[in-house]
Image 1 (cartoon, helix red, strand yellow):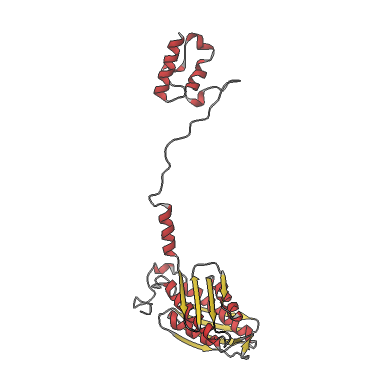
Image 2: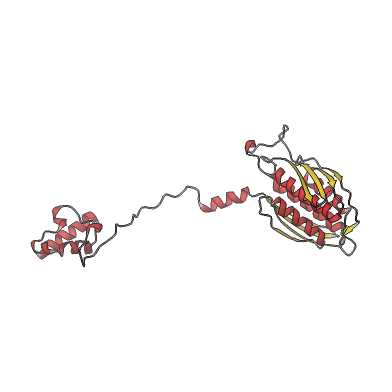
Length: 283
């Protein structure tokens, strides 16, 4: 009788894939003397049916061994597509007067890592990053023992070129930006068009010749240089202001917000270039 029950249990195991332990537990009940194992009745013992009584084993349902469905696109491919979608660019510019590195992420969070050697310019670049929500990195070494002119100019030239590269074909963007920024008594209005056509019209009346060591006449020259290499039409108007620091800072804040607006995607464009000519780039 014992050998017969063992053979029956082995057969049930082979047919149903249940464990020998489950079958042994089922056969260890009072009906073991009669050899009435559930496996003999033609219905395999399910793991979650075994036990339940006091002092008996109890098993949870067996987990599925089927592989979960996996997207046809792998994680690495998705990462590569995300990298391609990032609007990030960097430019290195070296001359006998300066060495400049600029990196811009147009879809950043407002991080600024700038060391230009011109403290007030670093403060203004921080305004562009913070209020434009761009990630901006600027590293520069220049002949600041002469003055700030060459360093400020070359940073602006590199910044404009970097901006143009990050924008690519400029497809799908708003293109136009318009913002007025107050700072206490100062109020400055900035309007821009990322048209591919460089132009600056600047109407600022800054009372002081210097803010710290920074020559205030370099404010207009900074934006002229940036407009030239970025392919931007830029209009700056001072509507009010007496304090030189406030006027300049309001200018950079208004510029940042207008640029943020112009660079933002236009969902209704669906990736098309915002031009009847179909082109916004300089070349």
